[in-house]
Amino acid sequence: MFWLLFAVFVIWAVTRFYLSGEDLSAYDSPAPQPLVEQTKPSAEHHKVVQSLGQLSGMGEGVSRKQRLQVTREYLDSMGEDVTFDGEIIPLTGTGFKGEWLVPSDSDSSCRTLYIHGGAFVMGSPLSHRAITTKYALLTGGPVLSLDYRLMPENSRQAGIDDCRMAYRWLLENAPDGKLPVQTVYVSGDSAGGNLTLSLSAWIRDQGLRAPNAVVALSPATDSTLGGGSFKTNEKTDYMLGPLLSKINRVPRWLLQWMGWFSNRINPADPRVSPVLGDLGGLPPTLVQASLGEMLLDDSVRYVNKARASGSPAELQTWQHMVHVWQIFVRELPEAQDAFVEIDKFLQAHRGEQLKEAAA
Image 1: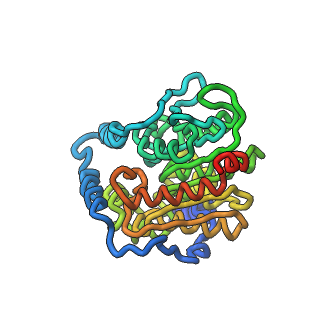
Image 2: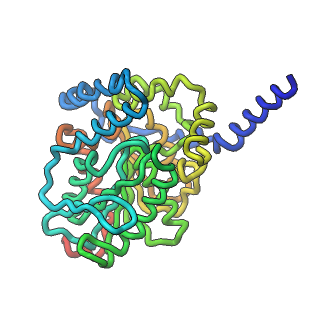
Image 3: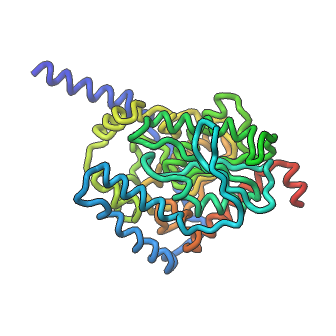
């Protein structure tokens, strides 16, 4: 009996003081307010929700490996019919994978690094071309869409390392060779938003040239799963809800231990939970999230803590939207509105010489 009680105490202590991280409830306020009051979503949003209905039953009756392959193929199919008035160039000889999206009349001194989402186990430059091509058109410069190494074939740290390597490389290289950079942006969604915000802090700590602006779309910022919206918004998150409903039935402490063993990184480590790190001295950061998504609190707490730490951070929220609704920019007027706001933010922090040239 003694050893059983001792084991229970050890598990509790490790969970409480090592795996859970700091209490972030102080950063639940101020509460998010929608950018535009919207009593109901657009008709196009209902079509998107219907198209996502197949996610709940995808891969049933097959092995976990086969299910992962099916969902990877589904996500990639979302980018297969995206058209682009420019050139798509696969990266070679860089030590990491990815592709350049180079718009017509591209200004190579203005570069964007985009880090795709997909729960760290799926997604690719192909799956997110609706977003990356939009960034290329908005910025007028090339976009480096990173194809970082995915789990479970690779470690979580491998994907983090790819992001760091890509940013260092981007500072010195353009599609047409080594060229100095005037303006650099970093953006990502969901899991890619996690990697984006983690990268932003690492850039600061390394003393590297900071991005002019950072944009995170529905980012996952807390791998300890401490946000209440992860459970309260399950029914209103039409993308993540069907995929993560089973996870919500598992006790949080057990999920933290499972994450620790699968990632080989403490879930409270700022590398995988950027909201739990030092958020002072960061570049201008825009976060967009849906009020109905499971990761809402991840965005709210990150922005509130960053602002309290003195960093210029802004949160924009929309009502009713699916997780990372911006990927449906060709279908959703709300996604088009989101990119209008992103464009305003990027232009406000563009390099001074480029601002003068545009004027």
